[in-house]
Amino acid sequence: MLDGLSMLGHAWLGFLNVHSIAYGLGGAFIGIVMGILPGLSATLCIALLTTLTIKLQANDAILILICSYVGALYGGSRTAILLNIPGTAANAASCADGYALALQGQAGRAIGIATSGAFMGTLFGVLCLAMFTPTLAEVALSFGAYEFFWLALFGVAMSGSIVGDDPLKGWLMGALGLFVAQMGQEGLYAHDRFTFGWDELAGGISLIPALVGAFGFAEVLTTMSDPIERKLIDVRDSVLPRFREVVQYWRTVLRSGVIGVLTGLLPGVGEDSGAWMSYAAAKAASKEKEKFGKGSIDGLMAAETGDMASIPGHIIPALALGIPGSAPSAVLMAAMIIHGIQPGPMLLIQHPQFVYDVVAMTSLATFTILFFGLFMVRPLMLILRVKRTVLMPIVFLLCTVGAFANASRLFDIYAMLVIGIGAFFLRRRGYQMAPFVLGLVLGPLLDKSLRRGLVLSDGSIAPFFTRPICIAFATVTIFTILLYVPAFKALVQRTSGALGSLVKSMLPRRG
Image (cartoon, rainbow, N blue to C red; front, side):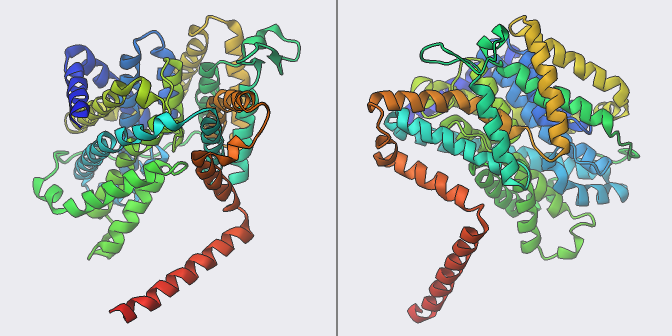
């Protein structure tokens, strides 16, 4: 306990300097800009910044990425309020009440409420991040090759629900990511696999070109193919939130913070789920349900608190288990791997200080969005006047430079272009790229763990199903997959309904 507090204090003191604060403000500013611009996402922001921060120290680079992650999700609330276009999927729940308030001439008030909810939601999530992540260190020493295999397989199984409504499409993209991860020389004996006679493929497909192509170049093509113009509502009133309003909805903040963190802890549940579930809970508990969708302060506060609290919630399983819960956290985890930090159970043993560093980084990100949200509103609104025909070529240039800068290989640019064009057409058919990246990230871990386990057991698969943690992961993984089978899902629902009825029938007797 005292060691943890000591490392947390050391982490906070380590980031209380001009150098780190400047990085944090810069990362948050870029994230807010990307979140404000319709068509650009938090995932794209992290992918591009990963290429631009590749030469920085690991802590500085991760600080910029986390601040940009928080900033992008916060920035998306601006377009939700002023344009009725969610800057990111997580801000969709803010459109109804935020835009309604803006139409009533209270755009500044809506931005102030959104800023307050985002600040308090992220701060609540940071506290949970500091408390819950280190507690998972106790099981870290129990993980071996067999457990890591099931952990990676569970992560790929979650690709069916990480984004979108069709699990089959998610699994197909996860499998495609696994296949691409196997290209090149394998990790144990350096034999070429799936190179098709191309020497350039011997080194495999690098993670950065894949990230930039799947989220950057594909985003450029998607945005340019379907431009949308909306009328911008000017901010005429004050953006400083009223203290009475913030205090009045403390129950909403606490409830939405808990929901946001819990949805973040569940692999495959994105930030948008935290926002919508918080919004629904606030509406159910409100005495003024008729105001929801027509300019409810309670609804806007709940939505922004829920989606921002889910960010630290997503970071907890990403750090402790190596399983991201959303597309941005998947790219953030990939960026950590690129910078030499392997998320997962052993992270808490090999680099325990890094966990507390992430807590300090997220804390700094929380205060940066408060600063920009209250004092930089009108200058940031000018960004919405930038035309897409000007912006998208710049983004494409950054994609090209980022793909080439890591290893200075022309092949990486070709890989980025091919993956980006393929991702563009796949997205038009409803296939999302986050499962692909998840498969690409977890592919090497799954492959090496399977083969090492088979070597240790002399070819026997029994240890994969007999060790206690393996049994737990295998059960959860198989159960998760079976839940997508309609007959099995109906059986589970009937069983849970029968058990619920049985419990209810027993309660009066006990009374």
